Image 1: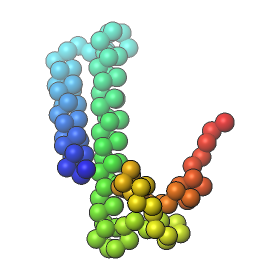
Image 2 (image 1 turned 180 degrees about the horizontal axis):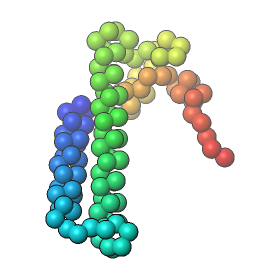
Image 3 (image 1 turned 90 degrees about the vertical axis):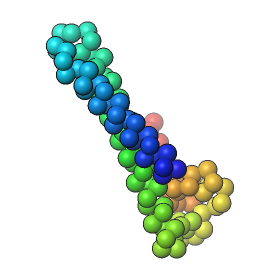
Image 4 (image 1 turned 180 degrees about the vertical axis):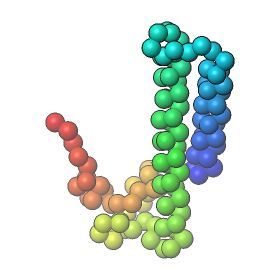
Length: 108
């Protein structure tokens, strides 16, 4: 998982650099040029995807640290074991399902 996240982040960095390089030689005015909005959107989308990949990488690194210190698979809130099925579905989970449900905020 970590290698995939690192690879995805590198690819997004390259894609962003390509968008920036392509726009560098163009006379881009985001406000008046119809292509400017597209370039700005692409750049923002790539930045959002990179932020997501960095977040996933941080979660994976934190899970590896918990594995190293012997706390992996224990709920960070109550200390009880996290169900194997939850860990299989979400290996970076930090809470058991009970505590995860309590902390989910739904908007009306």
